[in-house]
Image (cartoon, rainbow, N blue to C red; front, side, top):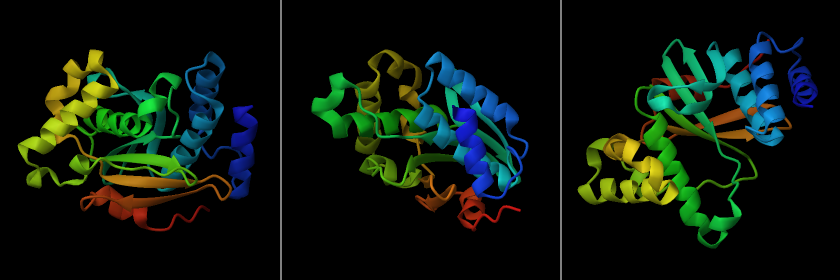
Length: 211
Protein backbone atom coordinates (compact mmCIF):
# COMPACT_ATOMS: atom_id res chain seq x y z
CA UNK A 1 0.00 0.00 0.00
CA UNK A 2 2.72 2.49 0.94
CA UNK A 3 4.73 1.61 -2.15
CA UNK A 4 1.84 2.36 -4.51
CA UNK A 5 1.11 5.66 -2.77
CA UNK A 6 4.77 6.64 -2.86
CA UNK A 7 4.88 5.85 -6.58
CA UNK A 8 1.84 8.08 -7.13
CA UNK A 9 3.44 10.99 -5.26
CA UNK A 10 6.72 10.60 -7.13
CA UNK A 11 4.84 10.70 -10.44
CA UNK A 12 3.26 14.00 -9.41
CA UNK A 13 6.76 15.45 -9.47
CA UNK A 14 7.45 13.94 -12.88
CA UNK A 15 9.88 11.39 -11.47
CA UNK A 16 10.44 7.94 -12.91
CA UNK A 17 10.18 5.57 -9.98
CA UNK A 18 11.59 6.60 -6.61
CA UNK A 19 14.62 8.42 -8.03
CA UNK A 20 17.10 6.40 -5.97
CA UNK A 21 14.97 6.05 -2.85
CA UNK A 22 13.98 2.39 -3.20
CA UNK A 23 15.80 1.57 0.04
CA UNK A 24 13.80 4.26 1.86
CA UNK A 25 10.52 2.84 0.54
CA UNK A 26 11.57 -0.71 1.50
CA UNK A 27 12.31 0.36 5.08
CA UNK A 28 9.06 2.31 5.44
CA UNK A 29 7.06 -0.54 3.88
CA UNK A 30 8.54 -2.93 6.44
CA UNK A 31 7.85 -0.57 9.36
CA UNK A 32 4.22 -0.20 8.31
CA UNK A 33 3.81 -3.96 7.90
CA UNK A 34 5.11 -4.66 11.39
CA UNK A 35 3.17 -1.81 13.00
CA UNK A 36 6.25 0.29 13.76
CA UNK A 37 4.69 3.37 12.14
CA UNK A 38 1.31 4.16 10.64
CA UNK A 39 0.85 4.38 6.89
CA UNK A 40 0.18 8.12 7.16
CA UNK A 41 3.34 8.74 9.21
CA UNK A 42 5.39 6.70 6.73
CA UNK A 43 3.96 8.65 3.80
CA UNK A 44 5.02 11.92 5.43
CA UNK A 45 8.47 10.47 6.06
CA UNK A 46 8.73 9.55 2.39
CA UNK A 47 7.80 13.07 1.26
CA UNK A 48 10.41 14.63 3.54
CA UNK A 49 13.04 12.09 2.46
CA UNK A 50 12.23 12.71 -1.20
CA UNK A 51 12.45 16.47 -0.73
CA UNK A 52 15.86 16.23 0.96
CA UNK A 53 17.06 13.76 -1.66
CA UNK A 54 16.15 16.13 -4.48
CA UNK A 55 18.08 18.86 -2.67
CA UNK A 56 21.25 16.77 -2.76
CA UNK A 57 21.12 14.99 0.59
CA UNK A 58 22.04 11.36 1.16
CA UNK A 59 18.88 10.25 2.97
CA UNK A 60 17.79 7.41 5.22
CA UNK A 61 14.72 6.71 7.36
CA UNK A 62 14.36 4.99 10.73
CA UNK A 63 18.08 5.58 11.26
CA UNK A 64 19.76 4.97 14.61
CA UNK A 65 21.55 8.09 15.84
CA UNK A 66 23.54 9.19 18.88
CA UNK A 67 22.06 7.97 22.14
CA UNK A 68 20.37 4.99 20.49
CA UNK A 69 17.33 6.94 19.30
CA UNK A 70 15.72 6.24 15.92
CA UNK A 71 15.35 9.26 13.64
CA UNK A 72 12.36 9.50 11.31
CA UNK A 73 14.47 11.01 8.53
CA UNK A 74 18.26 11.40 8.51
CA UNK A 75 20.12 13.35 5.85
CA UNK A 76 23.74 14.15 5.11
CA UNK A 77 24.25 17.05 2.74
CA UNK A 78 26.72 19.70 1.61
CA UNK A 79 26.17 21.79 4.75
CA UNK A 80 26.04 19.04 7.33
CA UNK A 81 23.70 16.56 8.97
CA UNK A 82 19.96 17.07 9.46
CA UNK A 83 17.44 15.04 11.43
CA UNK A 84 13.74 15.54 10.76
CA UNK A 85 11.10 14.22 13.13
CA UNK A 86 7.56 13.94 11.79
CA UNK A 87 4.67 15.03 14.02
CA UNK A 88 1.14 13.96 13.07
CA UNK A 89 -0.53 15.36 16.18
CA UNK A 90 -1.36 11.90 17.53
CA UNK A 91 -2.16 11.77 21.25
CA UNK A 92 -2.68 8.47 23.13
CA UNK A 93 -5.98 8.00 24.93
CA UNK A 94 -4.40 8.19 28.38
CA UNK A 95 -3.05 11.69 27.63
CA UNK A 96 -6.17 13.26 26.12
CA UNK A 97 -6.97 15.14 29.32
CA UNK A 98 -3.54 16.89 29.11
CA UNK A 99 -3.30 17.13 25.33
CA UNK A 100 -1.35 20.37 24.95
CA UNK A 101 1.07 19.46 27.71
CA UNK A 102 1.66 16.07 26.15
CA UNK A 103 2.45 17.49 22.69
CA UNK A 104 4.77 20.12 24.19
CA UNK A 105 6.55 17.49 26.28
CA UNK A 106 7.02 15.26 23.23
CA UNK A 107 8.67 18.12 21.33
CA UNK A 108 10.98 18.83 24.28
CA UNK A 109 11.92 15.16 24.53
CA UNK A 110 12.65 14.95 20.81
CA UNK A 111 14.69 18.15 20.88
CA UNK A 112 16.86 16.74 23.67
CA UNK A 113 17.11 13.34 21.98
CA UNK A 114 17.99 14.45 18.44
CA UNK A 115 19.46 17.97 18.34
CA UNK A 116 22.85 17.15 19.83
CA UNK A 117 25.38 15.91 17.32
CA UNK A 118 23.52 17.19 14.24
CA UNK A 119 23.76 20.48 12.38
CA UNK A 120 20.00 20.97 12.17
CA UNK A 121 17.05 19.43 13.99
CA UNK A 122 13.68 20.02 12.30
CA UNK A 123 10.12 19.14 13.29
CA UNK A 124 7.89 18.38 10.29
CA UNK A 125 4.11 18.24 10.24
CA UNK A 126 1.30 18.04 7.66
CA UNK A 127 -0.28 21.39 6.78
CA UNK A 128 -3.51 20.67 8.64
CA UNK A 129 -1.69 20.21 11.97
CA UNK A 130 -0.71 23.17 14.15
CA UNK A 131 2.49 22.79 16.15
CA UNK A 132 2.99 24.89 19.28
CA UNK A 133 6.63 25.08 20.40
CA UNK A 134 7.21 25.46 24.17
CA UNK A 135 8.53 29.01 24.84
CA UNK A 136 11.56 27.63 26.69
CA UNK A 137 12.69 25.94 23.44
CA UNK A 138 12.22 29.09 21.38
CA UNK A 139 14.92 30.96 23.26
CA UNK A 140 18.43 30.84 21.72
CA UNK A 141 20.78 28.71 23.82
CA UNK A 142 22.85 31.72 24.88
CA UNK A 143 19.76 33.55 26.18
CA UNK A 144 18.32 30.76 28.31
CA UNK A 145 17.98 31.20 32.03
CA UNK A 146 18.18 28.36 34.58
CA UNK A 147 14.38 28.37 34.78
CA UNK A 148 14.18 27.73 31.03
CA UNK A 149 16.44 24.70 31.36
CA UNK A 150 14.37 23.52 34.32
CA UNK A 151 11.17 23.86 32.29
CA UNK A 152 12.67 21.75 29.50
CA UNK A 153 13.72 19.07 32.00
CA UNK A 154 10.21 18.95 33.46
CA UNK A 155 8.69 18.56 30.00
CA UNK A 156 11.09 15.71 29.21
CA UNK A 157 10.11 13.95 32.44
CA UNK A 158 6.41 14.52 31.75
CA UNK A 159 6.75 12.80 28.39
CA UNK A 160 8.75 9.77 29.51
CA UNK A 161 9.94 9.64 33.11
CA UNK A 162 11.68 6.29 32.54
CA UNK A 163 13.93 7.57 29.77
CA UNK A 164 14.28 11.10 31.10
CA UNK A 165 17.32 10.11 33.17
CA UNK A 166 19.14 9.24 29.94
CA UNK A 167 18.75 12.65 28.32
CA UNK A 168 17.73 15.09 31.05
CA UNK A 169 21.30 16.37 31.17
CA UNK A 170 20.89 17.51 27.54
CA UNK A 171 18.14 19.98 28.41
CA UNK A 172 20.43 23.02 28.34
CA UNK A 173 21.44 22.17 24.75
CA UNK A 174 18.09 20.95 23.40
CA UNK A 175 17.00 22.99 20.41
CA UNK A 176 14.66 23.05 17.42
CA UNK A 177 16.32 24.72 14.45
CA UNK A 178 13.31 24.79 12.17
CA UNK A 179 9.83 23.65 11.26
CA UNK A 180 8.74 21.93 8.05
CA UNK A 181 5.21 22.07 6.70
CA UNK A 182 4.31 19.14 4.42
CA UNK A 183 1.88 19.63 1.54
CA UNK A 184 0.87 16.07 0.65
CA UNK A 185 -1.17 16.98 -2.44
CA UNK A 186 1.69 18.94 -4.04
CA UNK A 187 4.45 16.74 -2.56
CA UNK A 188 6.16 19.87 -1.24
CA UNK A 189 7.92 20.75 2.00
CA UNK A 190 8.24 24.35 3.20
CA UNK A 191 10.86 25.11 5.85
CA UNK A 192 10.81 27.87 8.45
CA UNK A 193 13.92 28.56 10.58
CA UNK A 194 13.69 29.13 14.34
CA UNK A 195 16.21 31.04 16.43
CA UNK A 196 18.20 31.95 13.34
CA UNK A 197 18.14 28.36 12.12
CA UNK A 198 21.39 26.97 10.74
CA UNK A 199 23.26 27.02 7.41
CA UNK A 200 21.24 23.97 6.40
CA UNK A 201 17.99 25.92 6.87
CA UNK A 202 19.29 28.61 4.52
CA UNK A 203 19.67 25.89 1.89
CA UNK A 204 16.28 24.33 2.60
CA UNK A 205 14.41 27.63 2.45
CA UNK A 206 15.22 27.91 -1.27
CA UNK A 207 12.48 26.52 -3.56
CA UNK A 208 12.99 22.90 -4.51
CA UNK A 209 12.92 22.40 -8.25
CA UNK A 210 12.88 18.68 -9.11
CA UNK A 211 14.12 17.69 -12.54
